[in-house]
Image 1 (tube, one colour):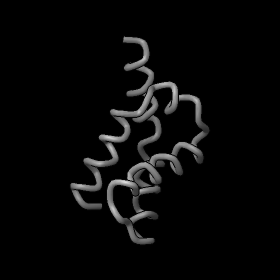
Image 2 (cartoon, one colour; image 1 turned 135 degrees about the vertical axis):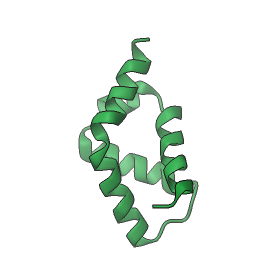
Image 3 (cartoon, helix red, strand yellow; image 1 turned 45 degrees about the vertical axis):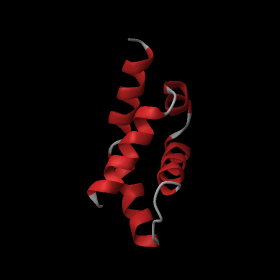
Image 4 (cartoon, helix red, strand yellow; image 1 turned 180 degrees about the vertical axis):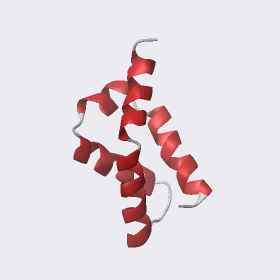
Amino acid sequence: MTPQMMRQLWSVVENAHSQTLLQMDDNSLVHWLVKQTATQALLDGCETDFLSEYIKSRLHLIRDIAYERQYS
């Protein structure tokens, strides 16, 4: 994963409404984040797969960020 792709993903997380991130199930959230990130950069199949796996490994962190943002 390139640094640019990682910045784009975390920018999507930061700019998304907390409720959006919290109400989706895991698979829907991964799909939504990949789709939102891909609108900012063209991703090939390998990059999309890698991004999906990265997001899956960070779902707890993403939801924690959204939860904290919602209640602070």
